[in-house]
Length: 165
Image 1 (cartoon, helix red, strand yellow):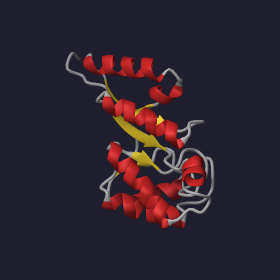
Image 2 (spheres, helix red, strand yellow):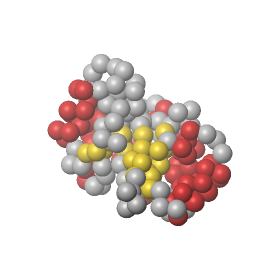
Image 3 (cartoon, helix red, strand yellow):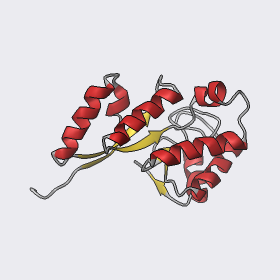
Image 4 (cartoon, helix red, strand yellow):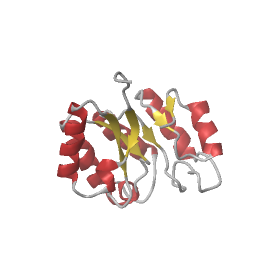
């Protein structure tokens, strides 16, 4: 049992509380002690800009990150206007690609402009299908953890790389 390594593929610790500095330091210390985790950046009430800030700080400290639900309301509205279009999907994918997340998800439990989560009915939207094509080109991994059954199978059918964290 001494050689067992535990890897948390979906740690929400960095965005569960608001003491980012302390939590990043704690995560770095845990990593030095051999505890492995992927820090899922959960949007909750964070803005897109705040989520990017948390992700950048984590990456600066050599922490692995992922994005849990990459469809932020303020990304769509405040940053790029009310209309969701191909250029906005490309911009989102480029920003995500620069941060090198180990994976990302299209939705959480609810429905958004990309997909339906486990508490909703429906599957991928047309924007979700197009976004997957872009993510495939950028070689990014999609997480299906919170997708409902229809979204799950549609993601698996379209995405080149899939994980369920």
